[in-house]
Length: 117
Image (cartoon, rainbow, N blue to C red):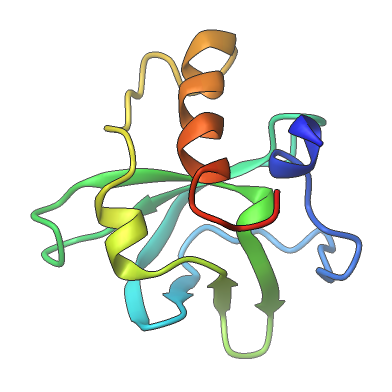
């Protein structure tokens, strides 16, 4: 179950399209654009630049929270609310790749959001 948070759902049509620059939509609106992505097995995620919405904050969004990707519209749809994203642990650019403890902290937060993951 833990790895499901860091893996794209089989229902998400994840092809080889580069998602950098895609808009990110949550259930209650737009939160920003994809600044970085990784499809690393067991650690897949997006780094989202929230721009002025939450004062230039970057957030890490695990692949398992993604509902769908619309390549034609250049949008990624995430099964979170703005509040859940806003309250997520602070993004740490020095730790987001390869730091298991940091990934565990993020995973604990997102699993606690009643997402069924």
